[in-house]
Image (tube, rainbow, N blue to C red):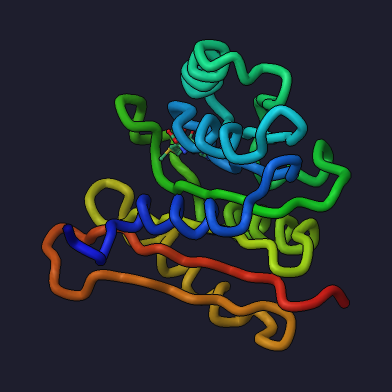
Length: 190
Ligand SMILES: C[S@@+](CC[C@H](N)C(=O)[O-])C[C@H]1O[C@@H](n2cnc3c(N)ncnc32)[C@H](O)[C@@H]1O
């Protein structure tokens, strides 16, 4: 079995290393609800998942998946941009997941954007506990272009290295711009 996993699998592996039953976490891009139910399974009955998306289709797909698994008591689904997450999440969080781009099977024109993603990541960094992580899967190329990736890579490289570690994993020999995995870990509270 291959040890080098794709970006999505790497993000799940990293998040499952830090999230424990009872934790509070955020899915910043609910989409079809896969990451939301993954997080809900990790935090357990006593935990809490805040799940954000801006489009009705994503909200209803996520809601269906949450109800199917009977996770509705531990998941709060919010129809708003993740750049407003501070209006809804008032407690410290252990992990925040971003799976960027557009809704698979949905409109390609409704996609994440560099400026709003960076604003949301900045707010998530404030909410993180020490040793909490933000996982970001960055899609680029195709009809999502390079703008968001270029904007974010500049933003990530400017993050204070004393307070946060930021690592990037990318496949350098694959065709069709495979997604990049970025992980931010908080080292201490200011
Ligand atoms: C690649 S999908 C997410 C996939 C999802 N994590 C899953 O497990 O199925 C990206 C989602 O981000 C959403 N999105 C775009 N801009 C957003 C924003 N500013 N805030 C929250 N969600 C946003 C899109 O509507 C889309 O559903």
